Image (cartoon, rainbow, N blue to C red):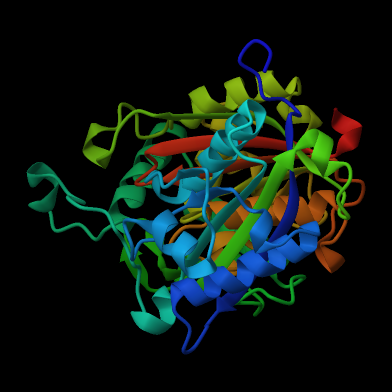
Length: 386
């Protein structure tokens, strides 16, 4: 490691998802096992090769111990952080550090949830979702927190409901190109605006799906990655930051900690937002995409609404954003971060089928945890970017 940088020292060599949408009769551990085996097969490796384990589940606080036991893995290094949906983008950084230090040789990063078929609603491990100050207003967790941020952005910068709807419509257009997307029906701005209100200014179609799903990625040191069957996708830059837990403590409802993590990740990678071919953003709600495009540096603060207008982030637009359909149309099994990475890998390996972005070599992934709380940025690239 030179100057604190892990640029290109490790790579994702296998990736898979499983049980998307509705996985009837399957528990999270079963789903994780299937995704993990498939990702390892993709990498030309087996469970016996794994000695680094990273992940978390809502249903088991001791997630890595549960998964290691279930899969018969005896890791020499493991981590079970609790940064919500951003956890997995921090896991890639932690895995890269462990691989560089020789603390493990093959890292498996996992996640799985059957929240749709088991509960039919958001499954959360968050304790103390609301402070005493917040709870008196009867908010809905987590929707009202994001709605508050959206309302403030609209007040500060003139962002409109139509611009929020552009995000949902763009996600749906990408999902229509994805055979595994949970929702693929046509969607218009008028449909989004006329949907039943959930928490002002959000209607139902401004909010993410509730689905099942599991995912896994496999990482090795860069030298080993070159000898494995799939084209390596290198971790070029990674950084995280968090400034608050509760929405009432967010310093500025229109600026997230991605404004800190993204510049650090881009600097480590030695690239700029203008160099990026595909962007994967944790779109739990339509406002996320707008605010995080600003904080990532793709447009100035306050310009996100105008930036996404006229299909700018849909297929054929100026910037390919959430090419899977994201949490709004592809899947959202409680935590989306790992699925952002898997989609980025598929794009950079040229395996995304009808939704493939031609010549994609560089991807930016941005995941949120909590209520716009934890923010982690990963910059991924092909060998051409080294």
